[in-house]
Length: 189
Picture 1: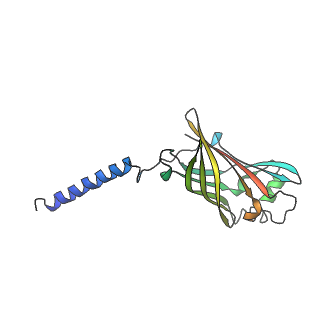
Picture 2: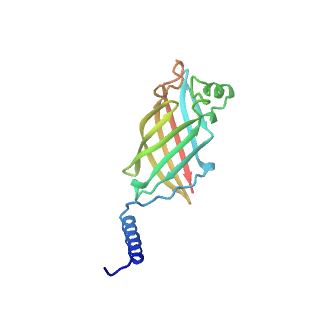
Picture 3: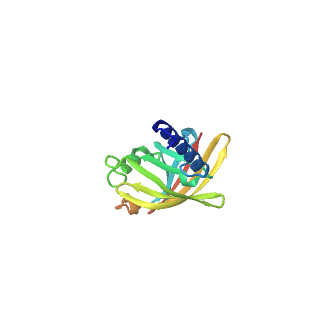
């Protein structure tokens, strides 16, 4: 044998370094850098009918981890959390009612959570699949994502319609529509 132990370790490090470079060049083990949210131009809103009248609302407190690279969808990832107590419809009494056990039960379930499981291209958009958790229910959902640029900002837009009853939200309410339209615009730097 022509190498001593010290040079064996050195050779192993060189081989590992070369392997990592090759894998990264091929997109294996490649990381996508998380993006920083720009809250000033991001929104999480919803629309629902109550007694036949449209009600618009929003959530004021949320966070997201966005790691998105259209050239590396396998390493891309979306995760978001919404503070249920931050619900805002413009009427304090209604907001407080929606925070109660029958609806969002904010004391027991302080967050709505989404975590992506797959991202696939679809023309000029992407289909993002993942797990949505509201209260004690987690369901598989998919939504179409449009990604664009606004100057130096990345803009991610999506809409998703869910059935509130699937998530045990307001099960005793017969005046509210079952379907809720959620609109999300997230911008990142």
